[in-house]
Length: 236
Image 1 (cartoon, one colour):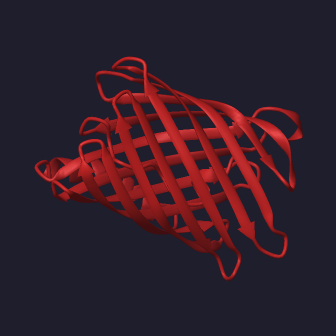
Image 2 (image 1 turned 90 degrees about the horizontal axis):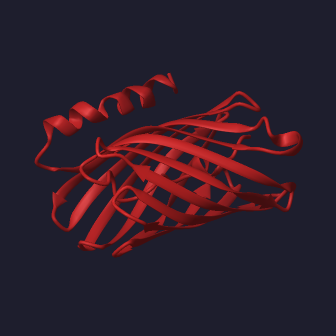
């Protein structure tokens, strides 16, 4: 049942967009993969099917729903995540938001919530988030910053930083830094790639790679990226 519900919701995003054409700001549906590419850990991968839709109530306020289903190849665990964002569009280039969600990873339930903002400085776009995860007292924080520079209408390059700090009896701190590239086709299909490094106080430093393909509707899709722990995990 855990798999069926998110898959059904993702499949419903396209007809929902068509039915509410006058009010939906954007939507996207895609596949993402990330993994470790060296040493004994190179078999660890995170495969995800992701969808999102954003509904505009007024020109200045919208709500965004994210749904994702993850599979971690190392442990064969599944991860399912739902996130709801409330977004204030200050102007055409600046938006702030708050979000809350729930996810299941390998049978563990947790909530995530936090604040986010994005600003378009012409060809440069910056997005940041601060999240708190709650899991029966085993809390964690996620801090993320993502920048992208448009070389032209199709090609963009950028960088991404993410830190996950878990506060448990075996507390851990993990930081990932990536160089990113994206190519948007006129059809609305966007291909994203990343190459970077992940380093934690309970694991060795490892090289990482990522690839994503998604269909964007409504111009550039939705306002904010995915949130929660499942999207931050590379492998398991």
